[in-house]
Image (cartoon, rainbow, N blue to C red; front, side, top):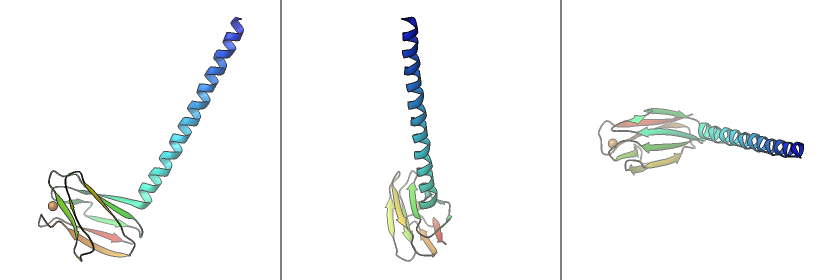
Length: 121
Ligand SMILES: [Cu+2]
């Protein structure tokens, strides 16, 4: 009787162990996939008061740039050649995929001197 109870407890423990290992392996795999995606396909640019960081972002062809307004004021992300123009409230973001090689300058229409550029290689 005592031995049987012992064995059941052992099986239950083994099951918990297997589920735990499988669960963490899955979590590790998901993390690997998402970090690869973020590194290869999306480049974040912080929009602050009154700057962009990095001021110059160098990316590869096909990368999406995501500007996020982390400042306390609204700003725009405006192409100097009219390719795009987006006003961002604090907390808002804007994403644009660059599929042509070149240098793309942009600025804030609200704050003089707030400029940045995207270099697509
Ligand atoms: Cu601004």
